[in-house]
Length: 126
Image (cartoon, rainbow, N blue to C red; front, side, top):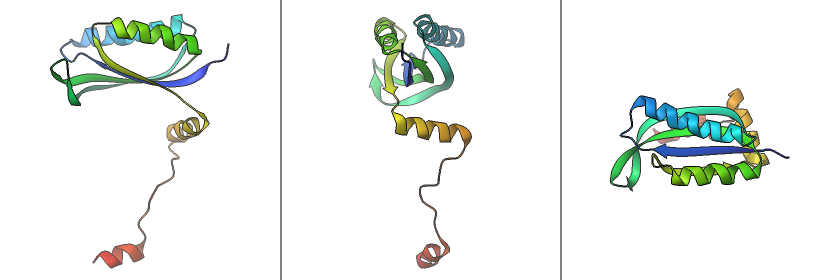
């Protein structure tokens, strides 16, 4: 069974305590692993302001993760996330070759600069 590379970001209810945040993150990780997935990286961003209110809440606890899994795993995980009371939103991205190259370069710290100001341009501004 072919495994694809995914990035998933989800937002948890901000009123939970630290133990409950960890419990939900562990639950999502276990769901992926139990369905033939392999966790690559999990990054808890913490409580951040939302762009718009969700269920009358203006903040949420963000979790970003990368994993490898077969496509069927996504259906199972997203179905569980949809019915979980503490998960407010989620987004799953399947990486293509270009996204994988960018991720690999970012991990190595070798992303190219998109724009570097030359000395000539900085002189014109003065």
